[in-house]
Image 1 (spheres, rainbow, N blue to C red):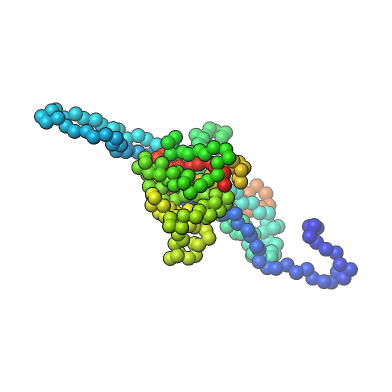
Image 2: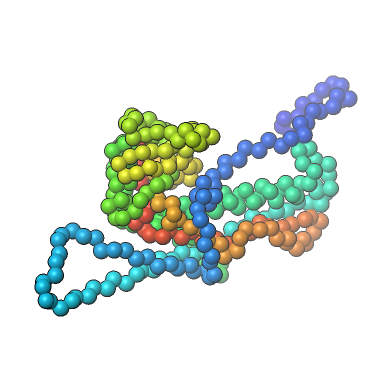
Length: 300
Protein backbone atom coordinates (compact mmCIF):
# COMPACT_ATOMS: atom_id res chain seq x y z
CA UNK A 1 0.00 0.00 0.00
CA UNK A 2 1.23 3.56 -0.60
CA UNK A 3 2.74 5.44 2.32
CA UNK A 4 -0.23 7.82 2.31
CA UNK A 5 -2.70 5.05 3.18
CA UNK A 6 -4.24 4.88 6.65
CA UNK A 7 -5.74 1.97 8.57
CA UNK A 8 -9.04 2.41 10.40
CA UNK A 9 -10.77 0.12 12.84
CA UNK A 10 -13.96 0.38 10.80
CA UNK A 11 -13.02 -1.06 7.39
CA UNK A 12 -16.44 -0.18 5.96
CA UNK A 13 -15.41 3.48 5.58
CA UNK A 14 -14.88 4.34 1.92
CA UNK A 15 -11.76 6.16 0.80
CA UNK A 16 -12.26 9.54 -0.84
CA UNK A 17 -10.42 9.90 -4.16
CA UNK A 18 -11.09 13.09 -6.10
CA UNK A 19 -11.90 12.37 -9.73
CA UNK A 20 -9.51 15.01 -11.14
CA UNK A 21 -5.76 14.59 -11.68
CA UNK A 22 -3.75 17.65 -10.63
CA UNK A 23 -0.66 18.01 -12.78
CA UNK A 24 2.01 20.64 -12.18
CA UNK A 25 3.66 21.29 -15.53
CA UNK A 26 7.15 22.83 -15.64
CA UNK A 27 6.53 23.70 -19.27
CA UNK A 28 8.48 26.28 -21.27
CA UNK A 29 7.57 26.80 -24.93
CA UNK A 30 7.98 30.53 -25.61
CA UNK A 31 10.49 30.20 -28.47
CA UNK A 32 8.96 27.19 -30.18
CA UNK A 33 5.46 28.67 -29.88
CA UNK A 34 6.37 32.11 -31.26
CA UNK A 35 9.07 31.43 -33.85
CA UNK A 36 8.18 31.11 -37.50
CA UNK A 37 8.55 27.76 -39.24
CA UNK A 38 10.52 26.73 -42.33
CA UNK A 39 10.66 23.60 -44.48
CA UNK A 40 13.57 21.20 -43.90
CA UNK A 41 14.40 18.47 -46.41
CA UNK A 42 17.53 16.77 -45.04
CA UNK A 43 19.22 15.96 -41.74
CA UNK A 44 21.77 18.74 -42.38
CA UNK A 45 19.95 22.03 -42.87
CA UNK A 46 21.91 24.95 -44.37
CA UNK A 47 21.16 28.60 -45.06
CA UNK A 48 22.98 31.61 -46.50
CA UNK A 49 24.08 34.71 -44.60
CA UNK A 50 25.21 37.93 -46.23
CA UNK A 51 26.00 41.40 -44.90
CA UNK A 52 26.95 44.87 -46.02
CA UNK A 53 30.45 46.20 -45.47
CA UNK A 54 30.55 48.47 -42.44
CA UNK A 55 31.69 52.04 -43.17
CA UNK A 56 34.44 53.46 -40.98
CA UNK A 57 35.88 56.24 -43.12
CA UNK A 58 35.02 58.50 -46.03
CA UNK A 59 35.78 57.16 -49.49
CA UNK A 60 35.44 58.70 -52.94
CA UNK A 61 36.19 58.04 -56.57
CA UNK A 62 38.87 59.88 -58.50
CA UNK A 63 37.37 61.66 -61.48
CA UNK A 64 37.92 59.64 -64.63
CA UNK A 65 39.44 56.65 -62.82
CA UNK A 66 38.56 53.05 -63.68
CA UNK A 67 35.93 51.36 -61.55
CA UNK A 68 37.16 48.87 -58.96
CA UNK A 69 35.13 45.88 -57.89
CA UNK A 70 34.92 44.17 -54.53
CA UNK A 71 32.62 41.17 -54.25
CA UNK A 72 31.74 39.68 -50.87
CA UNK A 73 30.29 36.20 -51.16
CA UNK A 74 27.62 35.00 -48.76
CA UNK A 75 28.54 32.41 -46.18
CA UNK A 76 26.71 29.28 -45.07
CA UNK A 77 25.43 28.35 -41.66
CA UNK A 78 24.08 24.92 -40.85
CA UNK A 79 22.41 22.84 -38.19
CA UNK A 80 21.44 19.22 -37.64
CA UNK A 81 17.95 17.88 -37.22
CA UNK A 82 17.26 16.15 -33.93
CA UNK A 83 14.91 13.22 -33.46
CA UNK A 84 12.85 13.67 -30.31
CA UNK A 85 10.86 10.65 -29.17
CA UNK A 86 8.85 9.83 -26.06
CA UNK A 87 7.48 6.33 -25.69
CA UNK A 88 4.10 5.41 -24.20
CA UNK A 89 3.58 1.97 -22.68
CA UNK A 90 0.61 0.88 -20.55
CA UNK A 91 -0.26 -2.68 -19.54
CA UNK A 92 -3.63 -3.88 -20.70
CA UNK A 93 -4.58 -4.57 -17.09
CA UNK A 94 -3.93 -0.92 -16.30
CA UNK A 95 -5.70 0.20 -19.47
CA UNK A 96 -8.82 -1.83 -18.71
CA UNK A 97 -9.01 -0.84 -15.05
CA UNK A 98 -11.34 1.91 -13.81
CA UNK A 99 -9.30 5.06 -13.11
CA UNK A 100 -9.97 8.27 -11.26
CA UNK A 101 -9.17 11.43 -13.19
CA UNK A 102 -9.40 9.94 -16.69
CA UNK A 103 -11.21 7.23 -18.56
CA UNK A 104 -8.31 6.16 -20.78
CA UNK A 105 -4.88 5.85 -19.16
CA UNK A 106 -3.11 5.41 -22.51
CA UNK A 107 -4.70 8.55 -23.98
CA UNK A 108 -3.71 10.50 -20.88
CA UNK A 109 -0.10 9.34 -21.28
CA UNK A 110 -0.16 10.30 -24.97
CA UNK A 111 -1.18 13.86 -24.09
CA UNK A 112 1.50 14.07 -21.41
CA UNK A 113 4.24 12.83 -23.76
CA UNK A 114 3.28 15.42 -26.36
CA UNK A 115 3.85 18.14 -23.76
CA UNK A 116 7.20 16.58 -22.87
CA UNK A 117 8.11 16.48 -26.58
CA UNK A 118 7.52 20.20 -26.98
CA UNK A 119 9.35 20.91 -23.73
CA UNK A 120 12.39 19.04 -25.03
CA UNK A 121 12.21 20.93 -28.32
CA UNK A 122 12.28 24.23 -26.43
CA UNK A 123 15.29 23.20 -24.34
CA UNK A 124 17.23 22.01 -27.40
CA UNK A 125 16.32 25.09 -29.46
CA UNK A 126 17.80 27.29 -26.74
CA UNK A 127 20.63 25.24 -25.17
CA UNK A 128 21.33 22.46 -27.66
CA UNK A 129 24.87 21.24 -28.37
CA UNK A 130 25.62 20.16 -31.93
CA UNK A 131 26.28 16.48 -32.57
CA UNK A 132 26.26 15.00 -36.08
CA UNK A 133 25.44 11.56 -34.72
CA UNK A 134 26.57 8.04 -35.55
CA UNK A 135 24.97 4.64 -35.74
CA UNK A 136 25.13 4.45 -31.96
CA UNK A 137 24.95 8.12 -30.92
CA UNK A 138 22.02 10.50 -31.34
CA UNK A 139 22.12 13.47 -33.67
CA UNK A 140 21.38 16.73 -31.83
CA UNK A 141 20.81 20.32 -32.89
CA UNK A 142 22.85 23.42 -32.12
CA UNK A 143 20.87 25.80 -29.92
CA UNK A 144 20.44 29.56 -30.12
CA UNK A 145 22.99 30.20 -27.36
CA UNK A 146 25.67 28.26 -29.25
CA UNK A 147 25.10 30.39 -32.37
CA UNK A 148 26.15 33.62 -30.62
CA UNK A 149 29.31 34.85 -32.33
CA UNK A 150 32.40 35.99 -30.42
CA UNK A 151 31.54 39.69 -30.73
CA UNK A 152 27.89 39.17 -29.85
CA UNK A 153 28.66 36.98 -26.84
CA UNK A 154 29.12 38.90 -23.59
CA UNK A 155 30.67 37.51 -20.43
CA UNK A 156 30.69 39.48 -17.22
CA UNK A 157 33.31 38.83 -14.57
CA UNK A 158 32.77 36.82 -11.42
CA UNK A 159 31.26 39.06 -8.77
CA UNK A 160 29.78 41.54 -11.24
CA UNK A 161 26.03 41.93 -10.86
CA UNK A 162 23.74 42.66 -13.80
CA UNK A 163 23.02 46.37 -14.07
CA UNK A 164 20.79 48.39 -16.35
CA UNK A 165 23.86 49.83 -18.05
CA UNK A 166 25.17 46.33 -18.75
CA UNK A 167 21.76 45.25 -20.02
CA UNK A 168 21.72 48.10 -22.54
CA UNK A 169 25.35 47.44 -23.46
CA UNK A 170 24.54 43.85 -24.44
CA UNK A 171 21.75 45.00 -26.71
CA UNK A 172 23.85 47.88 -28.03
CA UNK A 173 26.81 45.65 -28.90
CA UNK A 174 24.54 43.51 -31.06
CA UNK A 175 23.09 46.68 -32.63
CA UNK A 176 26.62 47.76 -33.58
CA UNK A 177 26.84 44.63 -35.71
CA UNK A 178 23.54 45.39 -37.42
CA UNK A 179 21.16 43.33 -35.28
CA UNK A 180 17.94 44.66 -33.76
CA UNK A 181 17.51 42.67 -30.55
CA UNK A 182 13.82 42.58 -29.66
CA UNK A 183 13.59 39.58 -27.29
CA UNK A 184 15.55 38.81 -24.14
CA UNK A 185 15.16 35.61 -22.12
CA UNK A 186 16.09 35.68 -18.44
CA UNK A 187 15.89 33.07 -15.72
CA UNK A 188 13.93 33.82 -12.56
CA UNK A 189 16.89 35.48 -10.83
CA UNK A 190 17.83 37.84 -13.67
CA UNK A 191 14.19 38.53 -14.51
CA UNK A 192 13.73 39.75 -10.95
CA UNK A 193 16.86 41.87 -11.31
CA UNK A 194 15.59 43.44 -14.52
CA UNK A 195 12.23 44.14 -12.89
CA UNK A 196 14.13 46.17 -10.29
CA UNK A 197 15.70 48.56 -12.80
CA UNK A 198 14.86 52.07 -11.66
CA UNK A 199 15.06 54.08 -14.89
CA UNK A 200 11.31 54.60 -15.09
CA UNK A 201 11.59 56.57 -18.31
CA UNK A 202 12.90 53.51 -20.11
CA UNK A 203 10.85 50.70 -18.61
CA UNK A 204 7.15 50.18 -19.00
CA UNK A 205 4.52 47.46 -18.99
CA UNK A 206 2.42 46.93 -22.09
CA UNK A 207 -0.96 47.70 -20.54
CA UNK A 208 -2.78 46.70 -23.73
CA UNK A 209 -1.74 43.12 -22.96
CA UNK A 210 -2.72 43.03 -19.32
CA UNK A 211 -2.78 39.26 -19.26
CA UNK A 212 0.98 39.28 -19.75
CA UNK A 213 1.78 41.56 -16.83
CA UNK A 214 3.98 39.69 -14.38
CA UNK A 215 5.22 37.31 -17.06
CA UNK A 216 6.39 39.49 -19.92
CA UNK A 217 7.81 42.99 -19.57
CA UNK A 218 8.31 45.52 -22.33
CA UNK A 219 11.58 47.37 -21.89
CA UNK A 220 11.98 50.64 -23.80
CA UNK A 221 15.65 51.56 -23.96
CA UNK A 222 18.17 53.34 -26.14
CA UNK A 223 18.11 50.57 -28.74
CA UNK A 224 14.37 50.11 -29.09
CA UNK A 225 11.62 48.09 -27.47
CA UNK A 226 12.59 44.71 -26.07
CA UNK A 227 10.32 41.94 -24.79
CA UNK A 228 11.79 40.46 -21.59
CA UNK A 229 10.59 36.91 -20.96
CA UNK A 230 11.07 34.85 -17.82
CA UNK A 231 12.43 31.54 -19.13
CA UNK A 232 13.24 28.48 -17.02
CA UNK A 233 15.86 27.21 -19.47
CA UNK A 234 18.01 30.37 -19.47
CA UNK A 235 20.38 28.71 -17.04
CA UNK A 236 23.67 26.82 -17.09
CA UNK A 237 24.82 24.68 -14.17
CA UNK A 238 24.24 26.58 -10.93
CA UNK A 239 21.30 29.00 -11.11
CA UNK A 240 21.51 31.83 -8.62
CA UNK A 241 25.31 31.83 -8.62
CA UNK A 242 27.98 32.70 -11.19
CA UNK A 243 28.15 31.26 -13.82
CA UNK A 244 24.66 29.82 -13.54
CA UNK A 245 22.47 32.66 -14.81
CA UNK A 246 22.07 33.32 -18.52
CA UNK A 247 20.66 36.31 -20.35
CA UNK A 248 19.90 35.49 -23.98
CA UNK A 249 18.84 38.06 -26.53
CA UNK A 250 17.93 37.68 -30.19
CA UNK A 251 16.24 39.26 -33.17
CA UNK A 252 13.06 37.21 -33.23
CA UNK A 253 12.30 37.35 -36.96
CA UNK A 254 15.60 35.56 -37.63
CA UNK A 255 14.74 32.58 -35.41
CA UNK A 256 12.94 29.80 -37.29
CA UNK A 257 11.96 26.26 -36.33
CA UNK A 258 12.29 23.68 -39.08
CA UNK A 259 10.58 20.29 -39.13
CA UNK A 260 11.88 17.37 -41.13
CA UNK A 261 9.02 15.44 -39.53
CA UNK A 262 6.37 17.21 -37.47
CA UNK A 263 5.56 15.74 -34.05
CA UNK A 264 2.95 13.00 -34.20
CA UNK A 265 1.88 9.78 -32.53
CA UNK A 266 2.82 6.34 -33.87
CA UNK A 267 1.80 2.89 -32.68
CA UNK A 268 4.60 0.59 -31.63
CA UNK A 269 4.45 -3.22 -31.80
CA UNK A 270 3.56 -4.82 -28.49
CA UNK A 271 5.52 -7.95 -27.57
CA UNK A 272 3.37 -8.68 -24.55
CA UNK A 273 0.15 -7.85 -22.74
CA UNK A 274 0.49 -4.12 -23.10
CA UNK A 275 -0.27 -1.24 -25.46
CA UNK A 276 2.66 0.77 -26.82
CA UNK A 277 3.32 3.82 -28.96
CA UNK A 278 5.46 6.92 -29.22
CA UNK A 279 5.25 10.65 -29.81
CA UNK A 280 8.05 11.39 -32.27
CA UNK A 281 9.26 14.13 -34.59
CA UNK A 282 12.45 15.58 -36.06
CA UNK A 283 13.29 19.27 -35.91
CA UNK A 284 16.03 21.90 -35.90
CA UNK A 285 16.45 25.64 -35.34
CA UNK A 286 17.68 28.19 -37.86
CA UNK A 287 19.39 31.34 -36.57
CA UNK A 288 19.47 33.74 -39.50
CA UNK A 289 22.73 35.37 -38.42
CA UNK A 290 25.18 34.74 -35.61
CA UNK A 291 25.28 38.50 -35.08
CA UNK A 292 21.60 38.51 -34.18
CA UNK A 293 22.15 36.62 -30.91
CA UNK A 294 23.85 37.51 -27.65
CA UNK A 295 24.34 35.38 -24.56
CA UNK A 296 25.77 36.44 -21.24
CA UNK A 297 26.47 34.77 -17.93
CA UNK A 298 26.33 37.06 -14.92
CA UNK A 299 25.33 37.48 -11.32
CA UNK A 300 21.95 38.70 -10.10
